[in-house]
Image (cartoon, rainbow, N blue to C red; front, side):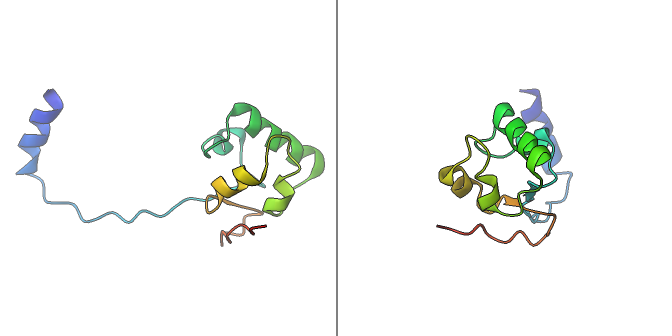
Length: 99
């Protein structure tokens, strides 16, 4: 109830805000922490830890296909992560290759 009163009062006092541009943030799987990986859909604590462990043991993934070496990561998860991940800090965030 308090929030509604504050909003009602503030509407006339504050200028309308400009539309905020939203830019997606891509997670670099080759450098991300467990916590960062857990922000991805379908990646919980166990899967995030498995990704980091595989990266430590075998080196960077380099591509979506490299991520398939992690137990529990399959084509459906890669499809779900399309546009949300990148590899090697490319910054370009190239789309994942489809099979």
